[in-house]
Image (tube, rainbow, N blue to C red; front, side, top):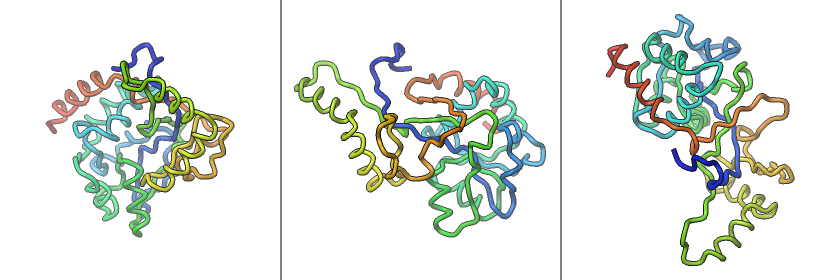
Length: 236
């Protein structure tokens, strides 16, 4: 873990986490009211997932499951020991499988699903607001920290103050919308318009959100459980 005291890394953007992709010809997304529904025996052998050992999205996904009080280690262990999941380590392998109908479900990153959907493949994302456990919120890897003994510390402070201002956040969102493939994530400032934020990245009023800052969550016990589950399932 870094920033154990939770006061040195500034997180200034937030976006919902989409964890479940599905083939629109094979799955009715209305079936999912809880993440525990992923353990329904009907999905055994019909699910692909990005491998945790490859990092990135998989770490965010499994940290959400592991640390959620209504899911936790038991849910994650059962998911990886009982559901006969096929893992992949490179994008867009899982998304291609999903679009071809080889699998009905895929625990894969939302950007890849959206790209596949834009290409006309029969894939989509289960709306996380439909899960009773709520919606995980991540920073989309955007955070701010001042380095110790920087060559121009005062200039760095001026920049940080501007970036976190209303004007700075509005400009940051607009630039992100232009240059980031996944679109802009919304500012945590409540006085900043989210008009430039892509619909899938907006936090919606009335939803049940859970902050899951990956910069602050220890991945070590998650990886240990993952390795043990694979060994038990004979997939190592």
